[in-house]
Image (cartoon, rainbow, N blue to C red):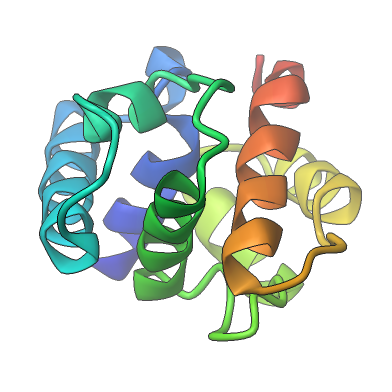
Length: 133
């Protein structure tokens, strides 16, 4: 189940690689994180996250991203990317080579906290999603 979730989280915008079931899992997870983060999130943050809205740069949105990525094992509490998990999980819906290219390109981010680092992973995916094309 976690494989389905994490594949969906980063690449909901890349419809060709992901099943409707994976998209539904991603929706449920984003709803859970919206509830966990609470008040102050932008309207439709889950949909905007799944669609790659790069204007989600406020602190609450960044922590929402940390919640989602943390639940699937992409990052730890400090926001450190788990490169092995990225490759393992993304290779379930893509070639191993594509998953490794993504993990290599998007495995480290600077930031004052885990939320900022999670936002770095989010931005890196959407700015480099052609890897999965």
